[in-house]
Image (cartoon, rainbow, N blue to C red; front, side):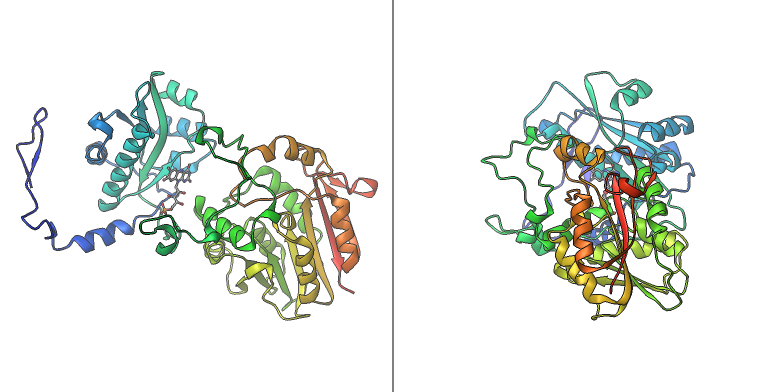
Length: 464
Ligand SMILES: Cc1cc2nc3c(=O)[nH]c(=O)nc-3n(C[C@H](O)[C@H](O)[C@H](O)COP(=O)(O)O)c2cc1C
């Protein structure tokens, strides 16, 4: 196709043809279809890839266009196992950094610009080209913006201060058990329009009202426009947001488990009532299934576990996660709850669990009405909430809520006494506790007069 290409002469490319309509290759559709099967992998087998192959992948990437053809990029390939381990450590524990065959750090020169992030756009073009090259060669890859402390990385790789480290590709061979799935794509009609902007309301997330939204005012830890109050979001917007963002990670065992949440979950699970063979339990809005897997482990194996979510994409994620966690899926039922309406008949459920989800809802009291409707007489609700009237609540108000909303969607901690009142209006109290004295991490169980002062308030109530 090309002729006359040397290291220092411009490359000439044959014209496609007089009509410019003839495809370059008869199998162009097939090639695009193969490219479209690329999906991110976060579970590599650790085997090495020959340096000559890695070099070809990086060189393929440099065929990408760049702003003003300046090619202000630099790619550092890390294949030394000790450095991959260090990179894993710096990234904050991304296992795939240590287990991939190689990391390719994506850098660009600073102190130079053509505006519009054109240098960043150029590196991005090259990075995706490398991913496609790796994919066509039979390897898998994952792009990472989450690389950790850039100062430590610059030190590790000897990157001068005039170069920015933007992200890293991890390339390797997937383990045979790696989830064979690609994150869901939005319906095409949602993400394009002709001649003018047009996009469904449910995919346009609310922000605080302002005259303008200057890009450089918006930071992860300081976003003046973030709207944390779920009452200002519709159920549809919340479901849409949560259904795509749960795929920020792969549905692997142990994903989305934080130290803080892990310890508290065990204490919350102690509130479960005794449930016999055949009993039906509904967990509401499980998002990535972190609580669901612990719930499944704790329940009698013959109990039917129903997961109710707003988006089917959370449910697909959780079913694969169950497989990865070696948990059975035969008594797992996945259901949609559009507009926050539970898909169950009146008085048909033995227990409903609401683990730290009421605070994500536009109308938590209506959800409690729903719970009452679906519970059998004598059935139980086990609920927990992040407590606004606690040190954590004050921290959320002063610090956390200034940041961008998390991938689980908007939420606002609720005052424990208020939620206690909502529960008492509808159900009969059986057990109430507080969990955690500190802003984060501890799971101390608080009883007596302290139940309304912990980071979490958790309770078991019974339908009369
Ligand atoms: C710019 C960029 C940064 C990303 N950063 C991360 C990251 O830090 N960690 C991670 O696990 N995945 C990261 N991803 C991967 C995305 O989560 C993934 O591409 C997305 O969920 C779509 O899935 P797919 O690649 O399987 O199609 C990143 C992707 C892009 C394009």
